[in-house]
Length: 265
Ligand code: SAM
Image 1 (cartoon, helix red, strand yellow):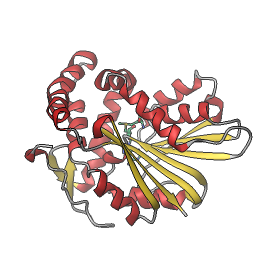
Image 2 (cartoon, helix red, strand yellow):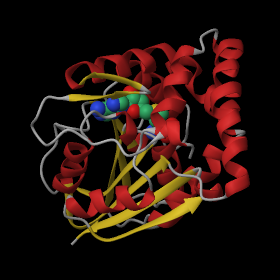
Image 3 (cartoon, helix red, strand yellow):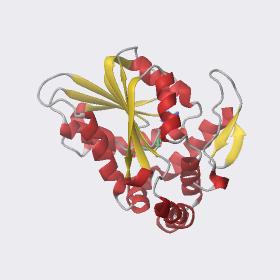
């Protein structure tokens, strides 16, 4: 990444109010979640279309990769997934399709607008009856300790204010033996791809936002927030700090995105 797009941004310490980032802007940490919520309220009804346009459909393959790595059980074996920042339900839909009748998914998101879009979409889908929806904050989940077999978060964790709190919550709600998987944009590790990716992100994506959704601003935040997120190694270390073991990551499409995996043992 270029020097002006540093990812080396400190997260505020646990429990501490401090400044943080909202895209490339520094903001009071207490304001960030409200700003993020405004973004997703504005994009919710065009979110799926914009995902396809912005990623050229790649997000679909990356989400398939998450579920392939998770390998939900087939058959009647009871298995519960919590998909945090689950938005319009793409991960839950794939999980329920891949798993057997014993699989249940809870989609949790802080945005009522995104959840409404997800509920509509999954309601039209054959596996929708095995999904539930909950409005909640990934930093303080209104859920019991040790109640899920798997926790996923796709393109969600970079939006939370305190990454460490979200990771602690993931650990808390997983059962011993539970699996954590996070899909997030990451650091490109192929030199020629970097400049193409930067041009696409900063010039093309906000323009697509203006043309397809009538508003480029939320998409500017989305691409800026990607550049402020810790790189693969640093994020893996944070997952380990939350208590997860056997932490690994896989790069997707030259590191444009990465899946991180960990286990609560
Ligand atoms: N997971 C979906 C996907 O991959 O298509 C949606 C990802 S969307 C880029 C990010 C989601 O994170 C939004 O739905 C937003 O409302 C949600 N979000 C942001 N902050 C959150 C928080 N603190 N707790 C839970 N969800 C949050």
